[in-house]
Structures are given as structure tokens and as C-alpha cells.
Amino acid sequence: MRYFFLWAVAISALCSSCETADESFSKNNNIPQEVFTTQQRKVNYYNVYKSVIDSFTYNEQLSHYNNLLQFQDHVNSLVPNSTVTEAIDFTQLNALENADEQFIDQLSYSTETKMAITAILNGTFNADMLTFISNTHEYDLINTLYAIYSNGNGNGDDDDDHWKDRRIIAFAYGFQYNITQAVLYAGAIDLMKYA
Image (cartoon, rainbow, N blue to C red):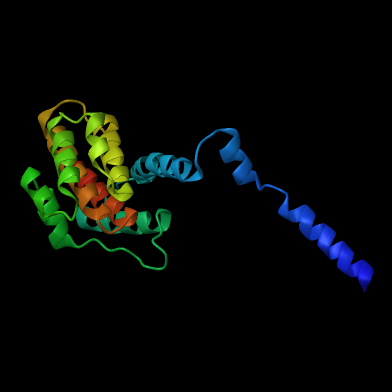
């Protein structure tokens, strides 16, 4: 029994002195784990949005409404929100299709975040505006919206700029709730180019 106890103590001491791979990675790069995770999340929201949009094929044989229903299933299969299936609220989608900068005031974000969204839409956004946003969810939103604005499908014509602005507003609207709704509504607005 004494040997069993000594082995248990020796193994416990050995295990408690080891570092995990995650701790080692964070220490070796002098990046706090929280910052590293936040940086990954910022990049991923745009990548998730872009990959969902790029992987959906609009079927011109179907009505626009049926394509939206297929897109809804597509989003829910690629961007799961636990066990909840997100559905498009077509009344809300209609409001987003006609949204302008004034719609931003209705969103549940801080004043600083609303100002940053407006600046993105106006093309006057600069990185200094991020210093006033302390909420990490809103900070991630602004980084994602700026990526959508900068890397969007815009080619400079007025009609595309019209839908680009609404995509940004729709993403911001959905992001109040979760990433699935953000991708769902912004993607639905993106599909308007086929309607």
C-alpha cells in the first residue's frame, strides 16, 4: 500500500509540473490567450460569411422565395446555432431591403458602434474609431463589417453600392442575436442581385 501511495504522489507531482500545449504556445509567442482567441474570432466571422455566400448556388429555375428558403437551409447547415434552426423573417427582410443609415439607430449597440457603422457606410471609417469600442462583441462586429465593406463584391456601380450598404446593415442587424442570423440576413440581401 505504501508503494502505491508513493507512486501516486510521484505521478501527481510529475503531471502538475507539465505545461499544456496551449499554455506553451501562448507563452512562447508572448500573446495572451484571450487576445489570441479574439483575433481568431475577428478573422473567422468574415471568413464564415464569405464561405457561406461563395458556396451557395442560386437556382434560376426556382422562384426567388424558394431560393431564399434553400439559402436558409444552407446557412443553418454551415453555421449551426446550437440546436436552434434560424428562419428568415420575411417582414424583417423587407425592412432590411429598404434600410438606410437611419435604420442603424434602431440597433441595440452602443453609440460608438453605431457611429462606426455609419462611418463604414460613408467610407469615412478609420481604425482609431475602434479604440472607443470596449465591448468585444461590438468590436468584432465592426472589424467584420469593415472587411465586408472593403472586400465585398462591390465594383463601384451605384446599384452594387446600394446592396453593399444594405448587406452591412443586415449583417449588423443579425449580429445583435448571433452569427447565424447575421450571415442569414446579409446573405439574403446579397441574393437580391438575382431577383
